[in-house]
Image (cartoon, rainbow, N blue to C red; front, side):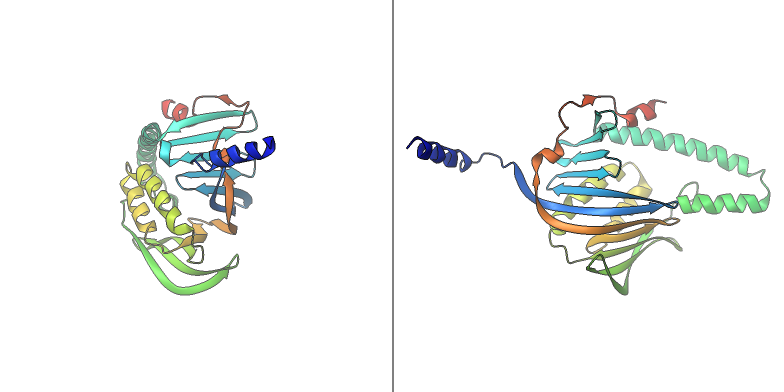
Length: 256
């Protein structure tokens, strides 16, 4: 009788709106190839929450509902927190320093031999710095192919006459419809201080579907190798026990 009573009250508590320990979300794995090396990442998503785990164990948690980013470093069991407003300030500070460095570089380029100067100008154009900002355009092509088991369509991201990126996206992942709003919210917030970044974020919204493969710049290639809808434990978006809080490296860089 006591066991039945305990089970009854347990059912009552569970049915009265107590928050679940797990929720339905989306999980995917990716490989990133750049400069001859390859890294893997795992991404966990719930509405307003996202976590990326790198191959070295480092984690980045984004909590849109709290306007907060958390970096977790398992190598020294530390973590740091950074609010979106503070992040924007740090990014603006870094951008101002980059502008100053680019201005200094352009001044020194005036004395370079012509062939060397043209090579530097081309490199800066590929990196998207030092030149006149050109509008971004998304071109949906008729090319299609199967990547990681998904039917994908090819999109070209152009900046002026330059093909800046290629994205292959699929419409076969139904859960992406709700997730896309969260991505747009975050990218709009982060890109708001940078006109070029804002234009890129606006262009990316024209891509229809979940990006399975993307090639950016000079051979930086990202491929999603696995996607699945799964129940995700809410603990995935919390700092592990025993970790020590430290100042955000992004803020420290902004002060240097």
